Amino acid sequence: MVYLNGNFIKKNKAFVSVMDRGFLFGDSIYEVLPVYEGNIFCMKPHLDRLDNNLKTVNIPNPHTSEKWAKLLRELLAHQPKHKHQYIYLQVTRGCDVDRKHTYDKLEPTVYMQSTSFEDSNRDEYLLGASAITRDDIRWSQCNIKVTSLLANIMYAQEAKQNNVEEVILCRDNVVTECSSSNLFIVKNGCVYTHPKGPHILPGITREVVLECADYCGINTEEVPISKEDLFDADEVWISSSTREVLPITKIDSVLINQGQVGEIWPLVYDRFQVEKSLNG
Ligand code: PMP
Image 1: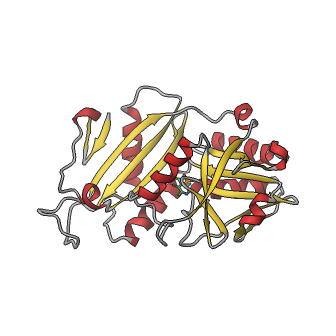
Image 2 (image 1 turned 180 degrees about the vertical axis):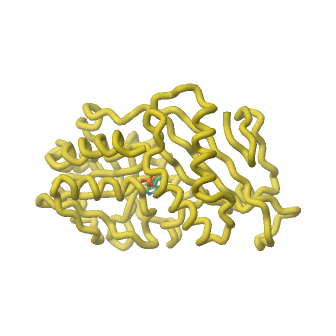
């Protein structure tokens, strides 16, 4: 069952008009919320980010946080009892009578679906994953979680064709984030990640990772990271709602830490698992 504009219906019965601006222009905002054993992880930060993003693009938020929380729980109640799932939520500006770039007052379209997913596997993560680097061709408002994801999709497909986990993006020799995750490096015991701003999505998982590092007594700094720093790092990690925090041990065929997951990652990953069990 999925949710569309006030109704819980079967996915194959859920249709959106061709006049929907989400379809025509990608004029819409989305969120992805992980759900562990029925508990929505970091619901408030996700709903706050949704609200901020909607305000930024001038789409009225159709619901209060309380109403969103209620709808999310109702959506979960309609699912078969998956152990873990993630909710995809999308709000478009709505349907107009004809296709035009400008808009007047419209009724937003709200769509939500839930998909089961495998929890992260520590042993698998300890094998390390690979990535490639590419120039960031995206626009300069990557902080907004918009559904116009053509560049991200092109990178994801390139990652798939190269049999790697992610594409690390580079702007003026600074590595900012990845096609669908944030980026961290560790050097001499300190965790570094790009500061919030127009060139990265302010990942909810990124915040949790920084908090976990902090909890473990590890220093963190939000500063730009050069491509040289990336290849010279002791550890490289990526983070996202569906991957949590995942170590990268090979980039563009260059081994990081001789291809071994470093010492700091397990501390942060283990603390992350505790956060998951506490947060709901
Ligand atoms: N950056 C980009 C470009 C992303 O698409 C995502 C997740 N979809 C992230 C970072 C990570 O964000 P979050 O931790 O909120 O899932």
